[in-house]
Amino acid sequence: MAVNLNNAVRIVGGRYRGRQLDVLDLEGLRPTPSRVRESIFNLIGSKVEGARVLDLFAGSGALGFEAVSRGASSLVLVEKDRDNYEILTEEAASFKGAAIKTVHQDAMQYLNGCSEQFDLVFLDPPYKADLLKPSLQLLIKKELITPESIVYAEMSSLNTTIVPGYEIIRQEEAGQVKFALLRLSSFLF
Image 1 (tube, rainbow, N blue to C red):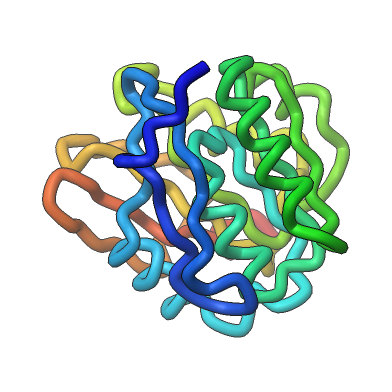
Image 2: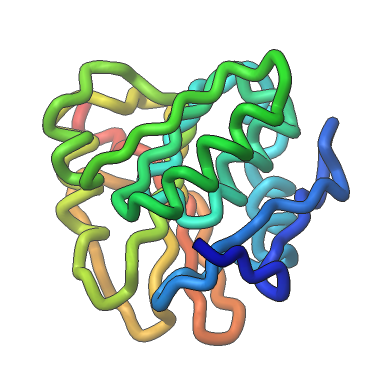
């Protein structure tokens, strides 16, 4: 298992600011750029402090580890790829005292079996896998988020996914990446 440090990412804020995260050189693995992460965390601000966080398609774990650095109370990283899961587990262990759980499982299977609620959810599935919409639907169906929860959804700028049950808090594009911050629609209550 070769770690390609040319693709390493750094945490951009909080307690672990500047810390480097090792990233495997895997096809399709594209860590969220630091400028996008900084923008996301500036937008959600104080909602990270004490949050229960799910990084569903963890990849590099950059979004989840960034949340821990900024005060999240717990983090679940779900990763299907065995080698990448092992790197995430090693990284998680190095965050001494942080409540970080790594799960080696398919994201959809995890959601179907999960009963935990989350305050902040990061969804950055492989663009070609068409898993964003079903993930968003399962979060509602399984009641894994609350009206106060924030869901970050990252997709190709060409993606036009609209999922009933969500309101867009903010949507931005940066190059070929589009992201949206979502919350449950008030029509559901």
